[in-house]
Image 1 (tube, protein in one colour):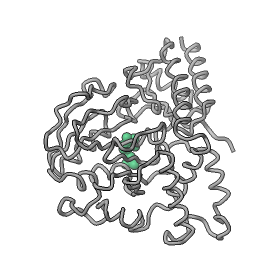
Image 2 (image 1 turned 180 degrees about the vertical axis):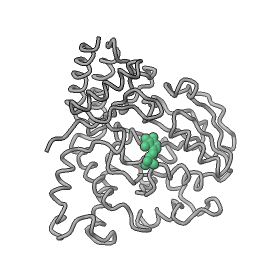
Image 3 (image 1 turned 90 degrees about the vertical axis):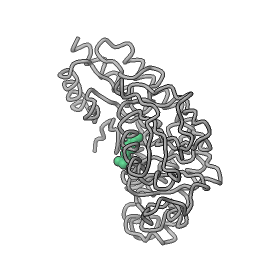
Length: 360
Ligand SMILES: *Cc1c(COP(=O)(O)O)cnc(C)c1O
């Protein structure tokens, strides 16, 4: 068996320890004689798995009592619709468009009411986060929406926008659990787990309890009502049991690593290795305004498409996989999520140095 360094933006690298544990428990989960994939979601065994996963997540993020944690299907993209369906009482919401995911969420919200684009960084290919200290927030906006870490472009909000008292809703898919976060600043904070937490096909949504009501837009399907899911403890129908199980293991791994403050320190160190190299390189350079750089997704280019392609191919041959940039922006992108070991980033930087020397 040989494992590569996987820089994929998602589905992405998972802690090897977690994969090995899952492997050991594959045929017989803790003496019950079956795999987690085969057990009832109503069983005592699975109840323990989901309860423990939620408790560990609450501990990691210090989630207050008055916030519900939901494990939902449909990925992050279904939230683009579920959020307006549940929150757009006045049928008005404000969106800050800092990349493709925010744009998709904004476009989806237009199906349900007036979705105002109150700021954008599209003018410079989303390479920065706009100044959000004094935006034209709509007086009747039900919420202000952001995508906090822009997976494709590699930007992250340093400070949250001034919402002038309006509810803040954030998609944190690609920075979830990469550093501590103050949940009380948000009405809803959610993320697809396949970026930094677990397998694909699930989103974790952390929702302030008073936002979970029967007062949803007319025609909202039962499954799309947060209240349906909250009342049933995320078990209204069969959930993504396997994904919840693996996420639970990752939460335990994060606790063992020292929690989110320790992860932040580790992630800052890893990102610095790569950004320092990019800043000193004569061949490669980063594409994002320095102040807004993401710790998780690091896009870079050589400025020459053929050279980019040559690099991606050579890197893959040397065991550095999935470094090709998103199909819409080209170039390269290294996603260095929690589970990417420091050695992986060190090895990548060494490889880039060598490539630069050989291609000077
Ligand atoms: C990947 C991603 C999504 C989409 O996630 P799905 O689970 O595939 O729907 C949404 N937002 C952000 C920030 C992402 O990185």
